[in-house]
Image (cartoon, rainbow, N blue to C red; front, side):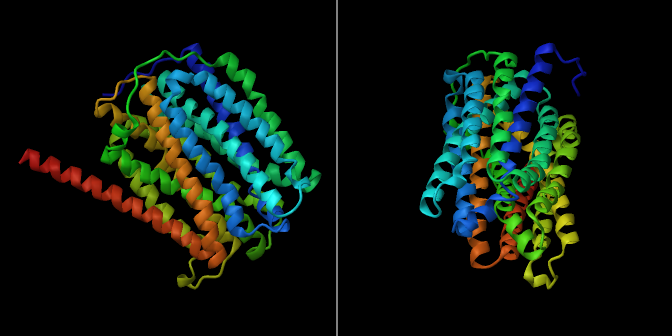
Length: 416
């Protein structure tokens, strides 16, 4: 039976505003690189594989940071983690904008990697804590709230690439990073004032959480989703510039085809996920299948003997954005439900573990996608690399579908 709708309290409204500001500003800072940084790095003698590593190292450090910070969120304090993380991330974003002044080659690469690593630690602190705080303040409507917040994630992803491309073309390399870094810094005092102080709770075990088969399957789904996004961040702009003859500004507009449907569909899938929990697994299956097909036609795969065309790329990006949203929105709520089903208490400790695991797995995919995808793109081409991402999504669908059938068979056996 559905819980009756209740009016949000003042604290819930303020928390929602704070979380939205974090999602929006963080995603703008993250997504501005796509339209121009890969090409700028190539001018400095950086290979496609190394460009993928510069993108991917961010996710690798976010993975490590999420696991550690998620484990100790109770001791550190969720509010402090958010504020400190935003401060560090904003500073690193501004600093990244001055790296074009260093010498080409090794020095540029090393400084890019160091800055991205520190930025990622700050980002992991803010995002891991924001998931936990959202689950604490909205325990009965977490998927709906996350769906609402993903609107602002989508807005950040929508505005970031064209804004970054326009600022780069108009003012040069530094200004996009200085502008967005200052925007992110503006959220520090806002969150310092708005966010509630969390109530301490007892500790739970990461190892125990990770031994649940259902949790591992959901984690694999999350991994494939973020891998696809990370792959596109590192490789799509060069593909669009070289194969489709687009400018950096046009590439930014092209990326809207991915982020706009994601942001627009998020609240709808969030409401469906909360209102009908039984359909969450099928949302992951259907969304994953659509993701697999669209990645195969994004290039498209050479086996189809279809020439790369702008309209087809845009159409497939729209399908990818929509299907990724359908698969992603139910995952966090389903992980929390699974943790509670297996005896984890309903407190900040459990929310910290789940949000840390979610962020870590998401980051693992964001590392795998750019690095492996960048290597395959350099060795073969973008078309085959996109096909590999599609194969990963299809494999995740197979695993989830097998799990659903196994559960159904056990239920039938109990009835008989």
